[in-house]
Length: 265
Ligand SMILES: Nc1nc2c(ncn2[C@@H]2O[C@H](COP(=O)(O)OP(=O)(O)O)[C@@H](O)[C@H]2O)c(=O)[nH]1
Ligand SMILES: [Mg+2]
Image (cartoon, rainbow, N blue to C red; front, top):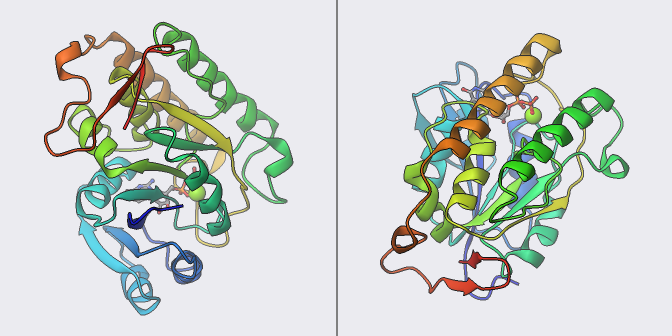
């Protein structure tokens, strides 16, 4: 499945002492994982010590926010392929195999939490949230119908995988500090005409601690606003000239896909 490539799991964490130990152990136990990297984002609790004890490598990022934490994590991870996930126990390490089944076909594989059959009891994904996420994804689809015609049902799922080479291509086009980083990654990959697909993942309840992005209606509205703002901002950006698309010295060849106009990293 990995074909001699290495796999890093990257977990941003802001005060997640209640869950980080179990999450690190769960992902480390997966047979294909080489490294579990926890990004300590200004934790004032025991997250770092517990993560280290559970066998994670820990790096620190002082710029606050989910986006800053993940940028730092992907810059510092050693693997050829990155799995991004959360510190709260809402995602299952067993889904790694599903992501990897598709990673040779595209630059980025996104999870979706809106497949109702995959949402566990107590998960923070009621009808309003599911349809809100689907709506945001459909707006993104529509805005990028030409030339990418993406097929998406969730722009905010933080469980996803991408090639390190894809990260290098999109990195400098990202700047969102917080949850807007999730759709920003997608939009920047689409700007580079990289191939992005989506698969359903298990989504369970937060196993402990407190949600930062979706606790209560106000937090959800704030997160949604940041995501929408980011999607429209990205669409209004100038398009990337052909010569600059997905070009990075020393990376595997990028093959054009004439039928869809998308690229494969
Ligand atoms: N809001 C927030 N989340 C952060 C930060 N740094 C890392 N994270 C992590 O981002 C992930 C998503 O946050 P979470 O509270 O679970 O949001 P939810 O999944 O929408 O309920 C968690 O693993 C957080 O620990 C930060 O500065 N702010
Ligand atoms: Mg969460």
